[in-house]
Length: 312
Image 1 (tube, rainbow, N blue to C red):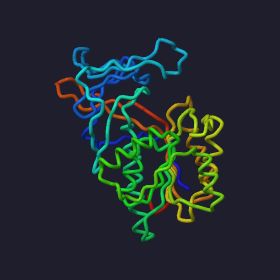
Image 2: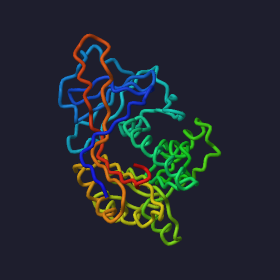
Image 3: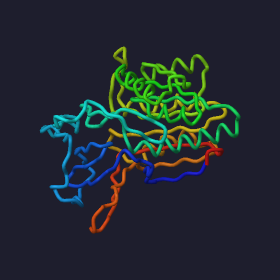
Image 4: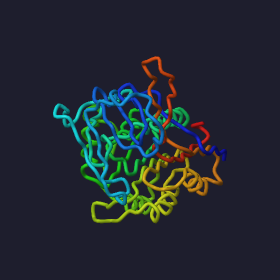
């Protein structure tokens, strides 16, 4: 297996999202026609634009308790901001909305994974003359599932939150993909994978974006430090003989991307293919003035992803 560590990947295909500026532990972003300021602990530098340029429809003000692990605080929103609005990425249409968790219902940096998975799915179809079966765990509002289905995959979309799955239905309907081969399930990820193994089911690709902690629909407790490694091992067992890829993204954990890299390296050590790891990032938009354009990158998450030879 070929390996590459410490890659920095981003997406240049966005039209409805831009990182306009960053600095002073904040980021200034455009989501469609609306602009937002959010905390960004990675931005330990000075902004490129002046403070007067940072005019936003919403500002997320973090909590005062420094021990809240960055999860406190709330939005200050302009009165004219709608509760949600439509955005697009390639053929996808989906809703953006401010959430209590600082984000707006999706993660723009994940588009780099969507495009990578789509290319692998198309290569799989060309080789095997059938759609790959993809399992998307901790699938949230469904953009990875919808993008994979649009590329030709059969997708099982799973999240423990009924609200998240309802948002995924909203996005599916906006895309006009009601007849797409996507199975939506509200369940605990570990419990579902255990049952699929007992049923002797298999998947050609698996996508995981686990939270730091959470609860399943029946009160099942998830803690990433304790539960991720066992789940990855079970997911590896769930892969088919025609295994295509496994994608792991880690946001809320104090660890380097090497942790994700070696977690997958252990699983795929004896398999052919390619293992890549590093950071998912967003890049600042080019300046529209005469100022020097640094176009800095802001790291958002660690990742590791393995693909078979046909996807390279």
